[in-house]
Image 1 (cartoon, rainbow, N blue to C red):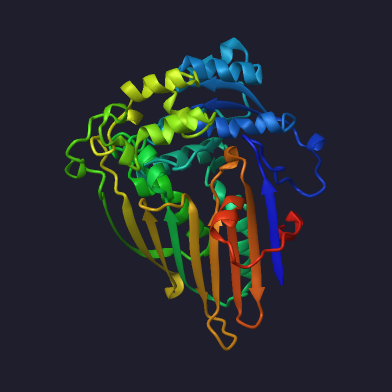
Image 2: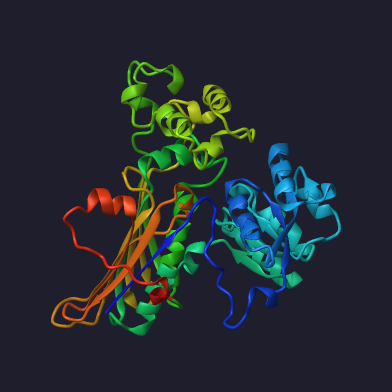
Length: 423
């Protein structure tokens, strides 16, 4: 039995939303939302309103950047009096939307979440929920007190691949789960962009890298295991390589004025300028152009003066680049997770799930899957699910066409079927 599907996206195009059976778009009431924090994540959520205007309408934006507020005003036809420089101003006025999307920096989640819950806004809160257990508990408590819906942006739970994994486990196809091995390869240049030069580089300003980057993965493990509670945890991590001690002798303080830039894999010129020269101004280049002007001149100025042009070995980063987490759950089953910065692949998560059911051979649910929203690249993605009745093994493989063409020559051919086969 084999299931496979493919989907193709361009820009910020989204797949059809999951709605209750028999409901048409016209039968679902349009939800009005206020967006607090309209950066790359907030904009990703607001793109839903662009794709499905009968389901969601953006009626307000709170963001400190004037260029971002203006961009959203034009895109969503927002009234001038519903544009706010900070979330506190938006929370002071009378409630004017059904829900609020909070996509502020990690350390700035709790205060706006509490304030808008008290105003009666239903809430989509970007992950991580907060950076301390105390803040998480306060958010939950206030939402309960005010009877508002709280949804945390662990979006990977709702990906068709994650749901299929959950379905297979719950069906008992591999018996009782005994152990889960899960890994997230962050990607060397992605880690450099976000966790050495970028917004999540410093624990004091943001949070630790496991929470910022891999709370999705810990959440997936817990989701797959259902009601089984985690009883014990051990974890180790370290910051490797991205330190001042490893800076090349002749390296400059900025990539645009560095004698060894051409041989450095972390060169800002390679990561940003060369992309922009090809017309690729999406993520991560768009993050560098914080003034909202996307051209070579603005990008060059940003690399000369801003954090993304700094030498990778001369930043104020302190978050770990490698971490392992071992977990023991109720019933004695275990899970092991690894977050690794030093990989060529970016976000191609790999999972092996060991079960107790045997068919003459050990039964394993082997998974390799890509769950990042990389639709801006225009790549086609393939999800392949296979069950071998002789070996008792499931294989769920997800890779893009670029990987197929360049890295799988001579490998097994995969027959594509309708996306319906993964529902």
